Image (cartoon, rainbow over all chains, first blue to last red; front, side, top):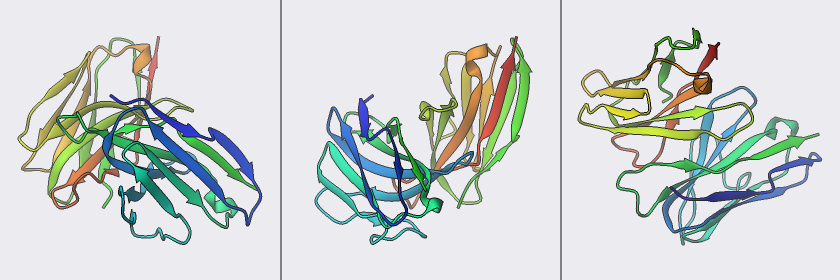
Length: 116
Length: 111
């Protein structure tokens, strides 16, 4: 498995501001994904972070609200823009290691975001 | 489309068994099982690929019925450490790598 870190681990933000979350992996990975988990809920896929090209967004999520970068095979960022209290959630990145024989996905520790 | 998980919750005494089910209305390529403890990230348990294989992790095993697009997770001789919320994540045959997660099954194991 891969060692995944996320920064920040938690933050409290004011509405209308933006926050960038970083996901760093200790080895090269093929796929990187960003998920949102609202309090007491399941995980919802936001987008697939593609290395060297634009991210692929799921229905209900748009680039203007959640811009994503993936400059290389070990790093990605997710920005939550123009935040409102409804954006309060845990944001998790997941990765699929290059040396995994199947598309096993491992989750980072998550970023807990509270928007006031 | 989100898979359907059942039951929503289950309470067990140590040593008892439980089954968690996950079903999809669409053709699946794989099913992934995770356990999440409160305040922590989901932890990968196992993946089942098309082919109906069964896998095991400690005393936790799972099966995948490709014809019915269903997977079941079996908790055998449960331990206190098995407590948590179990999620199945399904990968459709035409959505490589993308997982849709069920609503989760909360498992509480009591002494």
